Length: 65
Image (cartoon, rainbow, N blue to C red; front, side, top):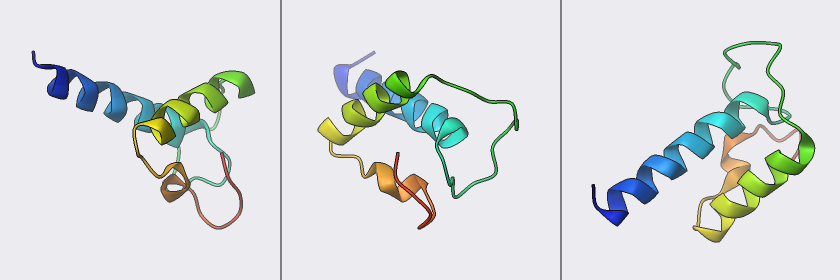
């Protein structure tokens, strides 16, 4: 697996995780019981932002990750 493919897979996984646990998600979470400690949400958000992903695009206008 190439580095580009691996990076894309990691980004897709982080996006899916954040979409499940962030406040004000655009999509309905898989489970209403989903939870991730805030410091891990922040780390995942920061990693995606560093890779150029707009984390705010996962949310409605109600808030930010």
